[in-house]
Length: 405
Image (cartoon, rainbow, N blue to C red; front, side, top):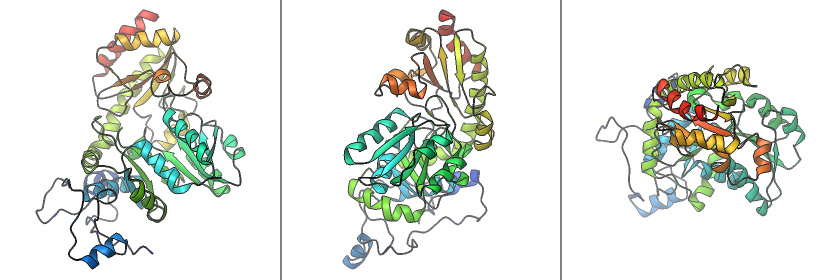
């Protein structure tokens, strides 16, 4: 049986410390050298005072750092900080956001279990759940916004509901509290991918979710530097179901990448506010462009779930939007190819604005029928707004839009 987690000290912070303080201060106490910036522990293993102590630590009878595949001080700092921001008692870092979902599936599910998942989530997430069908884990994909459809899809074998809100790329917003109730009614857990909003705007656990998934590659890092992921969940669930898989499978977060994400979280709140404000201005401008057929952005009153988004996302629309242009794929590619400031890349969450054609990149492995079901058209572009000047971004997009108006 696991012993209480008392071996690794905690930062001495007030119990009522607020989000912005936790984002800067939570982690581990300084070492004996008194460093103010968090230390980077680049070591694969840790030395023990004697064989008996090593045995206790490897048996998880005594909490300590053992081997960096599953325990490292820098990774622990990142995990503690993210858990504090999400309001969970535990967090486990992974090598990527997709590794976080893989860890969740391997830790929670077995052959014969059933998952209900939004049909509008990230393309690789859909593909991953489909791939696990070969191991006997079946997934039903339902409308992101139809709570009745989620409830109707429940089976006696349903163990997990998986949602992403807002979705990638159409920014559909699900009612987290309603889905949490559906999950509870079926004896299942609700996991929410909080990549787009981050805990700076949205904390799914406060709305009833059990588990929060992160791609630290996105807003947690914030500058497109590293690949990272995490699962935020009750510590008991992590200890009993996720950590054993991590120790064996080793989808580990490297200490360096953890350190980058750790430092990125210090500016998370101010970046999210600044980038979201720019995104709102761009979305409003795009709605007025003759070459644009539709804009998807939760901060716009035209968004079907605008009121829900404002309630769940601290009154902020986020920094990601998508828009559909005339001319289908040719029109979308014309807009992309005319840009000189926007980066044509599939990543998001960067301080640099990124522009993506989902049908041929992030969701390119899905069938056209799957993309259509999710509402992703050939003329759809996803824009993740960075910190450039808004007028420069408008001019950059206008160069292409003017060609297809």
